[in-house]
Length: 377
Ligand SMILES: Cc1ncc(COP(=O)(O)O)c(C=O)c1O
Image (cartoon, rainbow, N blue to C red; front, top):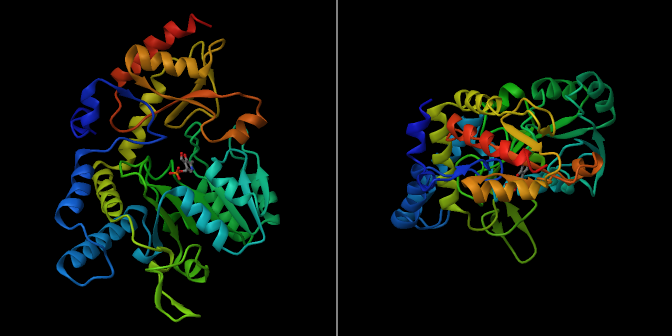
């Protein structure tokens, strides 16, 4: 992987910033921005309605993007790819439309995979220092649905999803994986995993904001009711009835974010060309280069995210000083996993999250700045 060459595609990196906040939002390469501009300048129309040339072009581009995403995650059919606004919307759709009795969550869910289930019957499975598959095998017997964070946005820890899915299925439970931090960083094949549903966002994988995906097995999506209805979701209507569209349109109500869909397809093409295994290895190498001496590591080390505190220095202060001194951009706080921080009596922490455009040289600068900060504690 040629990181220096990759960096040329990211205009913002020429401005002397060290961007370590990709778990929140990734940067976008020129190719994605150009593709979005292409939509707005060359064929700024709607898909699926008007049969003129511009409408047909948008329709083709949207179909192409859906096929790219299908291939990117190894789905069987493109109609199993539902475009949403973000991972949060994907999970809300699922939580409100899929019929189940009791859902099992982990104790380290992002708010987006916690709150939508809190109005249902749910249980919490503790991950602690790693995923205990034996304990899970026992506990899952009481549940018919599992919704787990695949890779944590806390620390980059990835659960053994394939084993989890297999065991859950043996016990008759369906599985949704919140893959918002997995899809951008490692190869995922939904068919090999046999996951029933996965959700993710575009803006964490070099794509535009305002775009997300819900993948579901065709037979399960077919059985689900709609969550939002209106234009595009019906074939026909009368004053007192309507006939629902087929997949995927049945879940994509109203005019869609066509520039977003097309831009997301381009982002997936870009990542495929580079190869996600290489991206993953690169991120692990970066995390390993961090000098952890004198830092309090938060969460489970081993992923492509580094979560820490400097004893005696407030996490927000650390983030502000890094930004002010060397344009190092990290995130500080509870990272939308308040429940885990509350349960562990940790007020918050610093999170440095990496991607394909970060370098070992940037880690060297981080180490130097952290060394200075440790002296403030
Ligand atoms: C693990 C995880 N799940 C869900 C989400 C929600 O994603 P979005 O805000 O794009 O809906 C995030 C975003 O940070 C995340 O990291």
